[in-house]
Length: 543
Image (cartoon, rainbow, N blue to C red; front, side, top):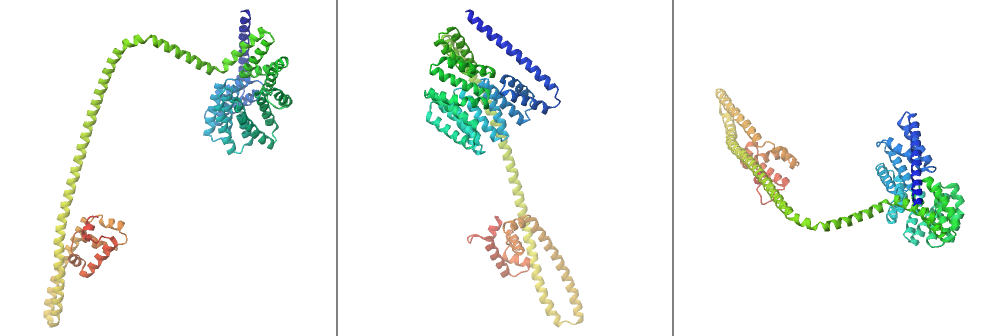
């Protein structure tokens, strides 16, 4: 019991110390920001500092990036997305995977809007790694495949190789060894071709983990120990800690417990500095088992407590699902006990249902009646409008008939005028040869009188033209548009045919021969492509 209190006291002391350090760093950040006088300078300062501490002190790095998140403007899309990506990396390193995934997804949306393919591909890779630590390796592989497709489009071989390495790791966790080896080989080919020693060491490290999966712990140790010096010089402190853990794990499996504890201690120190909860949970689990085998039960228990603490903080989503299942089970039992009460309430609910149904039906009846009345009113308006249009058409048709009657009268007058002119011409020719000078004078007077009558008749012809224009308003333009090949003379004849004038009447009006009008009719029929079984007048009148 005392040991448990001591452990709790130690944890409380650690949390208090961490909170004090956090406040101290934040005050320092705010003081530095006060000395800067522009948005760009402040944001640049926070981003650089956060990036600097990312490999050295991840918790301090997080403070800088959280301040950057508060400062950055959402309209500043590029920097906003970068801050989100950094926060995703920080929370990923501390083992806050749900939060990390949220930041990565938000950053990806912004980069997709910016059409930054390289950044989108990188974020698919990062999301996949988060899913890997959440043991959702199938989801992780889906993300890696998306990342590979985008990386190949932009010809980014390094990113492609990184994706293959991560994909191989997820296949390894799914115990699909052949697929894992296949993608490790693809990654090795890329990094050997590009002579990327850093990435080659990553692949070799991962292959060493694969050997451990195959229970080839000696081979795994050989690769890790050969690679450790290079990793210390060139890799991040986080990767060094992971390698220490992998070496310690292999020694544990080989039952060399003291060597295992030495490397696990080194991994634990780095994980604490990094705030790497996932690694701390793994280290605590293995150390607890080793200490138990060494019969150091007190420390074994202590590390088991640490393991549960770190494990619960990481996999809280799983814990929430378990709690939800318990709640559902409890609710089921409560509902079972309440069945009698519910049975008594059924009658009340049924009455309520009936009343509600009646009200709904009444509502629909009212709505239906209003819709019917509105429809009827609209139908009446449409019918009235139709009747008005019909009446207008009848009046217009009557006007046309009157105009046609007037035209026929005018045409008859015009025909008489033409006959009179012919008769007069003959009379003048006959009298001219036989008459004396006095007679010529008399003849001239008579002729002047007759010519005056001719002028009066000509005025009637002008009236005829006005009537034609009135009846055929717009018809000439319609003919031009529909039959552009018709000549002006042919269009005029179409106008007379529309008025249902005979060939003789048209010949009289135009002062042309009947044969010429027939010839015009033939050309019009041909150009308008009038069927042989239809009369030309009927065809034109129905255009």
